[in-house]
Amino acid sequence: MRLKILLLINMIFTGIVFANSGQRQDSLVNVNNLRIDLERLADDSLKGRATASPDEKRAALYIAQQMKNLGAKPLLDDSFIQSFPLEAFTMSPGSRLSFNTGEKEIEGLKIYDNYFFLKAYVKGNIDAESDVVYAGYGIREEGIDDYKDLEVSGKVVLVMGGMPSDPSVRDIIVSKGITPDMAFKIRTAQRLGARGIVIVTDSANTADWDRMKLRGIRPQHRFPGSKQKGEFFAAVLRPEAFREFIEPALSHLKVKAHSSLKTEIVNSYNAIGVIEGLDPVLKNEYVVLGAHHDHLGIIDGKIYNGADDNLSGVASVLEIGRILKKLGGNKRSIILITHGSEEALMLGSEYFVNHFDGIKNVSAMINIDMVGRENRDTIYAIGSARLGSEMKNILEETNSQSVNFVLNYRFDDPNDPDRMYYRSDHYSYAQKGIPVVFFYDHMLKDYHKYTDDPEKIDFQKVAKIVELSYKMALKCSNMDHKVSVKNP
View 1 (cartoon, one colour):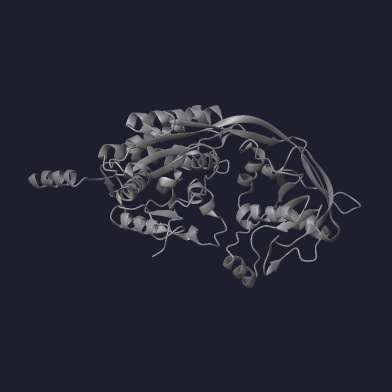
View 2 (cartoon, rainbow, N blue to C red):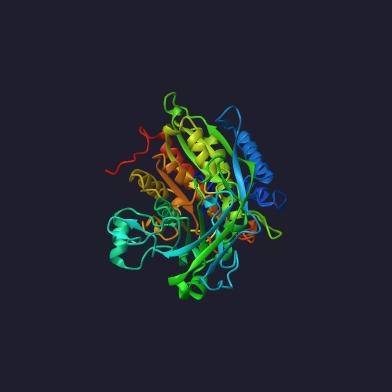
Protein backbone atom coordinates (compact mmCIF):
# COMPACT_ATOMS: atom_id res chain seq x y z
CA MET A 1 0.00 0.00 0.00
CA ARG A 2 2.79 2.37 0.96
CA LEU A 3 4.54 1.66 -2.35
CA LYS A 4 1.37 2.49 -4.31
CA ILE A 5 1.00 5.79 -2.45
CA LEU A 6 4.62 6.71 -3.13
CA LEU A 7 4.20 5.90 -6.81
CA LEU A 8 1.08 8.05 -7.00
CA ILE A 9 2.83 10.96 -5.29
CA ASN A 10 5.73 10.62 -7.68
CA MET A 11 3.40 10.78 -10.68
CA ILE A 12 1.74 13.92 -9.38
CA PHE A 13 4.99 15.72 -8.63
CA THR A 14 6.57 14.85 -11.96
CA GLY A 15 3.58 16.45 -13.67
CA ILE A 16 2.56 13.31 -15.50
CA VAL A 17 -0.76 11.56 -15.45
CA PHE A 18 -1.87 8.66 -17.57
CA ALA A 19 -4.84 8.73 -19.89
CA ASN A 20 -7.13 5.75 -20.27
CA SER A 21 -5.06 4.64 -23.24
CA GLY A 22 -2.03 4.27 -21.00
CA GLN A 23 -0.15 7.07 -22.77
CA ARG A 24 1.43 9.99 -20.93
CA GLN A 25 -0.30 13.35 -20.88
CA ASP A 26 0.94 16.73 -19.71
CA SER A 27 -0.87 17.52 -16.47
CA LEU A 28 -1.32 21.14 -17.54
CA VAL A 29 -3.57 20.07 -20.43
CA ASN A 30 -7.20 19.83 -19.40
CA VAL A 31 -8.98 17.47 -21.79
CA ASN A 32 -12.33 18.47 -20.35
CA ASN A 33 -11.71 22.06 -21.48
CA LEU A 34 -10.97 20.81 -24.98
CA ARG A 35 -14.15 18.78 -25.04
CA ILE A 36 -16.35 21.60 -23.71
CA ASP A 37 -15.10 24.20 -26.21
CA LEU A 38 -15.29 21.84 -29.17
CA GLU A 39 -18.74 20.47 -28.37
CA ARG A 40 -20.23 23.91 -27.74
CA LEU A 41 -18.95 25.25 -31.03
CA ALA A 42 -19.97 22.08 -32.89
CA ASP A 43 -23.53 22.24 -31.56
CA ASP A 44 -26.25 22.21 -34.23
CA SER A 45 -27.47 25.58 -32.94
CA LEU A 46 -24.44 27.20 -34.61
CA LYS A 47 -25.54 25.73 -37.95
CA GLY A 48 -22.05 24.85 -39.15
CA ARG A 49 -20.55 28.36 -38.76
CA ALA A 50 -20.68 29.21 -42.46
CA THR A 51 -18.17 31.80 -43.60
CA ALA A 52 -19.37 35.38 -43.06
CA SER A 53 -22.67 34.27 -41.54
CA PRO A 54 -24.34 35.31 -38.26
CA ASP A 55 -23.39 31.87 -36.96
CA GLU A 56 -19.72 32.48 -37.68
CA LYS A 57 -20.05 35.71 -35.69
CA ARG A 58 -21.62 33.84 -32.78
CA ALA A 59 -18.71 31.39 -32.80
CA ALA A 60 -16.17 34.24 -32.88
CA LEU A 61 -17.92 35.93 -29.94
CA TYR A 62 -17.80 32.72 -27.89
CA ILE A 63 -14.08 32.36 -28.64
CA ALA A 64 -13.45 36.00 -27.79
CA GLN A 65 -15.17 35.53 -24.44
CA GLN A 66 -13.00 32.52 -23.68
CA MET A 67 -9.90 34.56 -24.51
CA LYS A 68 -11.06 37.25 -22.11
CA ASN A 69 -11.84 34.65 -19.44
CA LEU A 70 -8.39 33.08 -19.63
CA GLY A 71 -6.77 36.47 -19.05
CA ALA A 72 -5.68 37.49 -22.51
CA LYS A 73 -5.95 41.12 -23.56
CA PRO A 74 -7.33 42.60 -26.76
CA LEU A 75 -4.71 43.11 -29.44
CA LEU A 76 -6.54 45.63 -31.62
CA ASP A 77 -8.69 48.63 -30.69
CA ASP A 78 -9.69 47.33 -27.24
CA SER A 79 -11.70 44.51 -28.81
CA PHE A 80 -11.19 40.78 -29.16
CA ILE A 81 -13.08 40.84 -32.48
CA GLN A 82 -11.72 42.05 -35.80
CA SER A 83 -14.55 42.47 -38.30
CA PHE A 84 -13.90 42.81 -42.03
CA PRO A 85 -16.22 43.14 -45.04
CA LEU A 86 -16.42 40.63 -47.85
CA GLU A 87 -18.35 40.34 -51.06
CA ALA A 88 -20.34 37.09 -51.17
CA PHE A 89 -21.31 35.85 -54.60
CA THR A 90 -23.14 32.90 -56.11
CA MET A 91 -23.86 31.83 -59.67
CA SER A 92 -27.27 32.66 -61.07
CA PRO A 93 -29.47 29.59 -61.72
CA GLY A 94 -29.29 30.05 -65.49
CA SER A 95 -25.50 29.80 -65.77
CA ARG A 96 -24.52 27.24 -68.36
CA LEU A 97 -21.54 25.93 -70.37
CA SER A 98 -22.21 24.05 -73.61
CA PHE A 99 -20.05 22.61 -76.36
CA ASN A 100 -20.89 22.00 -80.00
CA THR A 101 -19.16 20.68 -83.09
CA GLY A 102 -20.43 23.43 -85.33
CA GLU A 103 -23.28 21.19 -86.44
CA LYS A 104 -24.93 20.09 -83.20
CA GLU A 105 -24.66 20.60 -79.47
CA ILE A 106 -22.97 17.92 -77.41
CA GLU A 107 -25.60 16.63 -75.02
CA GLY A 108 -25.14 15.07 -71.60
CA LEU A 109 -23.20 17.76 -69.78
CA LYS A 110 -24.86 19.04 -66.60
CA ILE A 111 -23.66 21.82 -64.36
CA TYR A 112 -22.19 20.53 -61.05
CA ASP A 113 -22.39 16.92 -62.27
CA ASN A 114 -19.80 17.43 -65.04
CA TYR A 115 -18.58 21.02 -64.75
CA PHE A 116 -18.93 24.24 -62.84
CA PHE A 117 -17.75 27.83 -63.10
CA LEU A 118 -14.98 29.15 -60.88
CA LYS A 119 -16.87 32.10 -59.48
CA ALA A 120 -13.78 34.10 -58.57
CA TYR A 121 -13.05 34.46 -62.30
CA VAL A 122 -16.49 35.55 -63.43
CA LYS A 123 -17.16 39.26 -63.67
CA GLY A 124 -20.77 40.33 -63.98
CA ASN A 125 -22.55 38.75 -66.93
CA ILE A 126 -20.72 36.48 -69.36
CA ASP A 127 -22.15 35.64 -72.77
CA ALA A 128 -19.40 34.13 -74.86
CA GLU A 129 -19.27 32.00 -77.98
CA SER A 130 -15.89 30.92 -79.28
CA ASP A 131 -13.73 28.31 -80.90
CA VAL A 132 -11.97 26.04 -78.41
CA VAL A 133 -8.17 25.97 -78.54
CA TYR A 134 -6.57 22.95 -76.90
CA ALA A 135 -3.30 23.92 -75.17
CA GLY A 136 -2.05 20.77 -73.45
CA TYR A 137 -1.26 21.50 -69.81
CA GLY A 138 -1.52 25.25 -70.30
CA ILE A 139 2.13 26.00 -69.41
CA ARG A 140 4.20 28.66 -71.11
CA GLU A 141 7.62 29.12 -69.54
CA GLU A 142 11.19 29.00 -70.80
CA GLY A 143 11.74 25.46 -72.07
CA ILE A 144 8.03 24.55 -72.01
CA ASP A 145 5.47 26.06 -74.36
CA ASP A 146 2.08 24.41 -74.70
CA TYR A 147 0.90 27.53 -76.55
CA LYS A 148 3.49 27.33 -79.33
CA ASP A 149 1.97 28.25 -82.72
CA LEU A 150 -1.49 28.68 -81.13
CA GLU A 151 -3.60 31.82 -81.51
CA VAL A 152 -5.70 32.15 -78.38
CA SER A 153 -6.55 35.85 -78.22
CA GLY A 154 -10.30 36.22 -77.81
CA LYS A 155 -10.82 32.46 -77.74
CA VAL A 156 -11.52 29.87 -75.06
CA VAL A 157 -8.60 27.68 -74.04
CA LEU A 158 -9.03 24.09 -72.88
CA VAL A 159 -6.17 22.66 -70.82
CA MET A 160 -5.47 19.62 -68.70
CA GLY A 161 -5.09 20.01 -64.95
CA GLY A 162 -2.03 18.99 -62.96
CA MET A 163 1.43 18.26 -64.37
CA PRO A 164 2.59 16.44 -67.52
CA SER A 165 3.67 12.85 -67.01
CA ASP A 166 6.90 13.27 -69.00
CA PRO A 167 9.70 13.13 -66.37
CA SER A 168 11.95 15.53 -68.29
CA VAL A 169 9.19 18.15 -68.46
CA ARG A 170 8.33 17.65 -64.80
CA ASP A 171 12.00 18.18 -63.92
CA ILE A 172 12.00 21.52 -65.73
CA ILE A 173 8.84 22.59 -63.93
CA VAL A 174 10.24 21.67 -60.52
CA SER A 175 13.64 23.24 -61.21
CA LYS A 176 11.97 26.54 -62.09
CA GLY A 177 9.82 26.49 -58.97
CA ILE A 178 6.64 26.51 -61.05
CA THR A 179 3.43 25.34 -59.42
CA PRO A 180 1.12 24.55 -62.36
CA ASP A 181 -2.12 24.69 -60.39
CA MET A 182 -5.41 26.11 -61.64
CA ALA A 183 -4.51 29.68 -60.71
CA PHE A 184 -1.24 29.43 -62.65
CA LYS A 185 -2.99 28.10 -65.76
CA ILE A 186 -5.68 30.78 -65.51
CA ARG A 187 -3.12 33.59 -65.20
CA THR A 188 -1.25 32.28 -68.25
CA ALA A 189 -4.41 32.17 -70.37
CA GLN A 190 -5.38 35.68 -69.26
CA ARG A 191 -1.91 37.00 -70.06
CA LEU A 192 -2.24 35.64 -73.61
CA GLY A 193 -5.58 37.35 -74.10
CA ALA A 194 -7.88 34.34 -73.93
CA ARG A 195 -11.61 34.95 -73.54
CA GLY A 196 -11.89 32.13 -71.04
CA ILE A 197 -10.44 28.82 -69.91
CA VAL A 198 -11.83 25.35 -69.23
CA ILE A 199 -9.60 23.15 -67.08
CA VAL A 200 -9.99 19.37 -67.09
CA THR A 201 -9.39 18.56 -63.43
CA ASP A 202 -6.62 16.14 -62.58
CA SER A 203 -7.03 13.04 -60.42
CA ALA A 204 -5.86 14.83 -57.26
CA ASN A 205 -8.78 17.23 -57.53
CA THR A 206 -11.46 14.79 -58.67
CA ALA A 207 -10.97 12.02 -56.10
CA ASP A 208 -14.05 13.44 -54.40
CA TRP A 209 -16.06 15.42 -56.94
CA ASP A 210 -18.97 15.84 -54.54
CA ARG A 211 -16.68 17.71 -52.16
CA MET A 212 -15.10 19.71 -54.93
CA LYS A 213 -18.38 20.85 -56.45
CA LEU A 214 -19.33 22.46 -53.13
CA ARG A 215 -17.01 25.25 -54.22
CA GLY A 216 -19.29 25.83 -57.17
CA ILE A 217 -22.57 25.59 -55.27
CA ARG A 218 -21.97 27.44 -52.02
CA PRO A 219 -21.28 31.19 -51.82
CA GLN A 220 -17.74 32.29 -52.50
CA HIS A 221 -16.12 35.36 -50.99
CA ARG A 222 -13.59 38.00 -51.87
CA PHE A 223 -12.62 41.42 -50.62
CA PRO A 224 -14.82 44.19 -52.00
CA GLY A 225 -13.33 45.85 -55.03
CA SER A 226 -11.18 42.84 -55.95
CA LYS A 227 -13.17 41.72 -58.99
CA GLN A 228 -11.27 40.39 -61.96
CA LYS A 229 -10.69 42.91 -64.72
CA GLY A 230 -11.99 42.28 -68.22
CA GLU A 231 -14.52 39.88 -69.62
CA PHE A 232 -13.07 36.50 -68.74
CA PHE A 233 -14.41 33.27 -67.28
CA ALA A 234 -12.95 30.04 -65.93
CA ALA A 235 -14.60 26.66 -65.50
CA VAL A 236 -13.54 23.16 -64.52
CA LEU A 237 -14.57 19.97 -66.29
CA ARG A 238 -14.65 16.48 -64.89
CA PRO A 239 -12.12 14.21 -66.68
CA GLU A 240 -14.70 11.49 -67.32
CA ALA A 241 -16.86 14.07 -69.10
CA PHE A 242 -13.87 15.25 -71.11
CA ARG A 243 -13.08 11.73 -72.32
CA GLU A 244 -16.70 10.84 -73.12
CA PHE A 245 -18.04 14.06 -74.60
CA ILE A 246 -15.25 16.46 -75.52
CA GLU A 247 -12.12 14.60 -76.58
CA PRO A 248 -13.71 12.90 -79.64
CA ALA A 249 -14.66 16.31 -81.06
CA LEU A 250 -11.62 18.28 -79.92
CA SER A 251 -10.36 19.26 -83.38
CA HIS A 252 -13.50 21.18 -84.33
CA LEU A 253 -15.03 22.23 -81.03
CA LYS A 254 -16.89 25.40 -80.12
CA VAL A 255 -18.14 26.54 -76.73
CA LYS A 256 -20.87 28.80 -75.40
CA ALA A 257 -20.74 30.22 -71.88
CA HIS A 258 -23.56 32.04 -70.15
CA SER A 259 -23.13 33.07 -66.56
CA SER A 260 -23.85 35.82 -64.10
CA LEU A 261 -23.28 36.49 -60.42
CA LYS A 262 -25.49 37.48 -57.55
CA THR A 263 -23.54 39.47 -54.97
CA GLU A 264 -23.97 41.02 -51.51
CA ILE A 265 -21.70 42.58 -48.88
CA VAL A 266 -21.28 40.53 -45.69
CA ASN A 267 -18.93 40.54 -42.69
CA SER A 268 -16.51 37.95 -41.38
CA TYR A 269 -14.60 37.91 -38.09
CA ASN A 270 -11.24 37.11 -36.53
CA ALA A 271 -11.13 36.48 -32.78
CA ILE A 272 -7.83 37.78 -31.36
CA GLY A 273 -6.26 38.01 -27.92
CA VAL A 274 -2.71 38.52 -26.70
CA ILE A 275 -0.78 37.26 -23.70
CA GLU A 276 1.70 40.02 -23.13
CA GLY A 277 5.38 39.20 -22.86
CA LEU A 278 7.33 39.78 -19.67
CA ASP A 279 10.44 41.28 -21.23
CA PRO A 280 10.15 45.09 -21.58
CA VAL A 281 11.79 44.99 -25.02
CA LEU A 282 10.86 41.57 -26.43
CA LYS A 283 7.18 41.99 -25.55
CA ASN A 284 6.91 44.09 -28.70
CA GLU A 285 7.64 40.97 -30.74
CA TYR A 286 5.14 38.14 -31.18
CA VAL A 287 4.59 34.44 -31.58
CA VAL A 288 1.24 33.56 -33.18
CA LEU A 289 -0.89 30.51 -32.38
CA GLY A 290 -3.73 30.20 -34.86
CA ALA A 291 -6.65 28.13 -36.11
CA HIS A 292 -9.83 28.87 -38.06
CA HIS A 293 -13.37 28.78 -36.71
CA ASP A 294 -15.52 28.95 -39.86
CA HIS A 295 -16.87 25.94 -41.73
CA LEU A 296 -19.42 25.10 -44.45
CA GLY A 297 -22.76 25.82 -42.78
CA ILE A 298 -25.86 23.98 -43.99
CA ILE A 299 -25.92 22.23 -47.38
CA ASP A 300 -28.96 20.35 -48.66
CA GLY A 301 -30.51 20.54 -45.21
CA LYS A 302 -27.55 18.90 -43.45
CA ILE A 303 -25.44 20.72 -40.86
CA TYR A 304 -21.70 20.57 -41.46
CA ASN A 305 -20.41 20.97 -37.89
CA GLY A 306 -16.71 20.66 -38.73
CA ALA A 307 -15.60 19.13 -35.45
CA ASP A 308 -12.14 18.24 -36.70
CA ASP A 309 -12.13 20.94 -39.37
CA ASN A 310 -11.41 22.97 -37.46
CA LEU A 311 -12.82 23.02 -33.95
CA SER A 312 -10.01 20.68 -32.95
CA GLY A 313 -7.69 23.59 -33.74
CA VAL A 314 -9.86 26.22 -32.07
CA ALA A 315 -10.14 24.21 -28.86
CA SER A 316 -6.37 23.70 -28.95
CA VAL A 317 -5.63 27.42 -29.25
CA LEU A 318 -7.90 28.25 -26.32
CA GLU A 319 -6.37 25.57 -24.10
CA ILE A 320 -2.86 26.66 -25.08
CA GLY A 321 -3.82 30.18 -24.06
CA ARG A 322 -4.99 28.99 -20.64
CA ILE A 323 -1.75 27.11 -20.08
CA LEU A 324 0.51 29.94 -21.20
CA LYS A 325 -1.34 32.46 -19.06
CA LYS A 326 -1.04 30.13 -16.08
CA LEU A 327 2.69 29.59 -16.65
CA GLY A 328 3.42 33.27 -17.27
CA GLY A 329 6.88 32.60 -18.66
CA ASN A 330 6.81 34.14 -22.15
CA LYS A 331 9.24 36.98 -22.88
CA ARG A 332 7.69 37.79 -26.25
CA SER A 333 3.98 38.40 -26.50
CA ILE A 334 1.87 35.51 -27.75
CA ILE A 335 -1.08 36.17 -30.05
CA LEU A 336 -4.02 33.78 -29.91
CA ILE A 337 -6.09 34.03 -33.07
CA THR A 338 -8.90 32.11 -34.69
CA HIS A 339 -9.45 33.25 -38.24
CA GLY A 340 -12.71 33.59 -40.07
CA SER A 341 -13.07 32.89 -43.78
CA GLU A 342 -10.36 30.23 -43.98
CA GLU A 343 -12.80 28.21 -46.07
CA ALA A 344 -12.91 31.23 -48.38
CA LEU A 345 -9.29 31.14 -49.58
CA MET A 346 -7.86 32.11 -46.16
CA LEU A 347 -9.27 35.64 -46.34
CA GLY A 348 -9.36 36.10 -42.55
CA SER A 349 -5.65 35.47 -42.13
CA GLU A 350 -4.89 37.54 -45.22
CA TYR A 351 -6.84 40.43 -43.74
CA PHE A 352 -5.08 40.17 -40.39
CA VAL A 353 -1.51 40.07 -41.73
CA ASN A 354 -2.24 43.06 -43.97
CA HIS A 355 -3.88 45.17 -41.24
CA PHE A 356 -1.76 44.41 -38.16
CA ASP A 357 0.90 47.08 -37.74
CA GLY A 358 3.14 44.70 -35.80
CA ILE A 359 3.25 41.97 -38.44
CA LYS A 360 6.95 42.67 -39.10
CA ASN A 361 7.62 41.86 -35.45
CA VAL A 362 6.12 38.37 -35.61
CA SER A 363 8.82 35.78 -34.98
CA ALA A 364 6.89 32.60 -35.79
CA MET A 365 3.42 31.24 -36.47
CA ILE A 366 1.99 27.85 -35.42
CA ASN A 367 -1.15 26.88 -37.32
CA ILE A 368 -3.39 24.12 -35.94
CA ASP A 369 -5.91 22.94 -38.53
CA MET A 370 -7.44 19.45 -38.16
CA VAL A 371 -5.63 17.57 -35.40
CA GLY A 372 -8.22 15.30 -33.76
CA ARG A 373 -8.41 12.28 -36.04
CA GLU A 374 -6.30 9.45 -37.50
CA ASN A 375 -3.35 7.82 -35.73
CA ARG A 376 -2.83 9.23 -32.25
CA ASP A 377 0.94 8.97 -32.49
CA THR A 378 1.39 10.65 -35.89
CA ILE A 379 0.94 14.21 -37.10
CA TYR A 380 1.70 15.85 -40.43
CA ALA A 381 4.02 18.83 -39.95
CA ILE A 382 3.97 21.10 -42.97
CA GLY A 383 6.15 24.03 -43.97
CA SER A 384 8.56 24.17 -41.03
CA ALA A 385 11.63 24.29 -43.28
CA ARG A 386 10.24 26.40 -46.11
CA LEU A 387 11.78 29.65 -44.84
CA GLY A 388 14.84 28.27 -43.09
CA SER A 389 15.85 25.34 -40.93
CA GLU A 390 15.47 26.81 -37.44
CA MET A 391 11.69 26.39 -37.18
CA LYS A 392 12.00 22.72 -38.07
CA ASN A 393 14.82 22.33 -35.54
CA ILE A 394 12.63 23.86 -32.82
CA LEU A 395 9.79 21.54 -33.80
CA GLU A 396 11.91 18.39 -33.70
CA GLU A 397 13.70 19.30 -30.49
CA THR A 398 10.46 20.14 -28.70
CA ASN A 399 8.74 17.03 -30.01
CA SER A 400 11.56 14.74 -28.85
CA GLN A 401 11.46 16.33 -25.40
CA SER A 402 7.70 16.00 -25.03
CA VAL A 403 5.08 14.04 -26.97
CA ASN A 404 7.28 12.14 -29.44
CA PHE A 405 4.90 12.29 -32.37
CA VAL A 406 5.98 10.56 -35.53
CA LEU A 407 6.36 13.72 -37.63
CA ASN A 408 5.27 13.11 -41.20
CA TYR A 409 6.77 15.55 -43.74
CA ARG A 410 5.06 14.08 -46.79
CA PHE A 411 3.34 17.32 -47.73
CA ASP A 412 6.61 19.25 -47.79
CA ASP A 413 7.43 17.54 -51.08
CA PRO A 414 7.59 20.30 -53.76
CA ASN A 415 5.65 17.96 -56.04
CA ASP A 416 2.84 17.44 -53.55
CA PRO A 417 -0.28 17.28 -55.77
CA ASP A 418 -2.53 18.36 -52.89
CA ARG A 419 -0.49 21.57 -52.34
CA MET A 420 -1.18 21.41 -48.61
CA TYR A 421 1.37 24.10 -47.79
CA TYR A 422 -0.77 26.63 -49.67
CA ARG A 423 -4.15 25.62 -48.24
CA SER A 424 -4.43 26.95 -44.70
CA ASP A 425 -3.94 30.16 -42.74
CA HIS A 426 -0.21 29.77 -42.07
CA TYR A 427 0.41 30.56 -45.73
CA SER A 428 -0.72 34.17 -45.27
CA TYR A 429 1.99 34.56 -42.63
CA ALA A 430 4.62 32.74 -44.68
CA GLN A 431 4.01 35.21 -47.50
CA LYS A 432 5.16 37.91 -45.07
CA GLY A 433 8.41 36.03 -44.49
CA ILE A 434 7.35 34.55 -41.13
CA PRO A 435 8.53 31.00 -40.26
CA VAL A 436 5.55 28.67 -39.84
CA VAL A 437 4.50 25.14 -39.06
CA PHE A 438 1.11 23.68 -39.92
CA PHE A 439 -0.16 20.72 -37.88
CA TYR A 440 -2.63 18.53 -39.77
CA ASP A 441 -4.03 14.99 -39.38
CA HIS A 442 -4.99 14.27 -43.03
CA MET A 443 -8.47 13.07 -42.12
CA LEU A 444 -10.18 12.16 -45.39
CA LYS A 445 -13.21 10.04 -44.57
CA ASP A 446 -15.31 12.89 -43.18
CA TYR A 447 -13.45 15.85 -44.68
CA HIS A 448 -15.94 18.55 -45.72
CA LYS A 449 -18.83 16.24 -44.96
CA TYR A 450 -21.72 16.55 -42.53
CA THR A 451 -20.37 13.49 -40.70
CA ASP A 452 -17.40 15.40 -39.20
CA ASP A 453 -18.86 15.30 -35.67
CA PRO A 454 -17.49 15.57 -32.10
CA GLU A 455 -17.94 11.91 -31.15
CA LYS A 456 -15.19 11.00 -33.63
CA ILE A 457 -12.57 13.29 -32.07
CA ASP A 458 -9.61 11.73 -30.28
CA PHE A 459 -9.14 14.26 -27.47
CA GLN A 460 -5.97 12.54 -26.30
CA LYS A 461 -4.39 13.33 -29.66
CA VAL A 462 -5.59 16.92 -29.42
CA ALA A 463 -4.03 17.10 -25.94
CA LYS A 464 -0.69 16.04 -27.42
CA ILE A 465 -0.93 18.78 -30.03
CA VAL A 466 -1.64 21.29 -27.26
CA GLU A 467 1.44 20.20 -25.35
CA LEU A 468 3.71 20.29 -28.38
CA SER A 469 2.37 23.68 -29.50
CA TYR A 470 2.56 25.51 -26.19
CA LYS A 471 6.09 24.26 -25.58
CA MET A 472 7.13 25.33 -29.08
CA ALA A 473 5.54 28.73 -28.53
CA LEU A 474 7.48 29.17 -25.29
CA LYS A 475 10.76 28.26 -26.99
CA CYS A 476 10.11 30.74 -29.79
CA SER A 477 9.04 33.35 -27.25
CA ASN A 478 12.11 33.05 -25.03
CA MET A 479 14.92 32.81 -27.59
CA ASP A 480 17.42 35.66 -27.69
CA HIS A 481 16.59 36.19 -31.38
CA LYS A 482 13.64 35.88 -33.72
CA VAL A 483 13.30 32.55 -35.47
CA SER A 484 15.76 32.66 -38.33
CA VAL A 485 14.65 32.57 -41.95
CA LYS A 486 18.08 31.52 -43.15
CA ASN A 487 19.66 28.12 -43.49
CA PRO A 488 22.98 27.58 -41.68
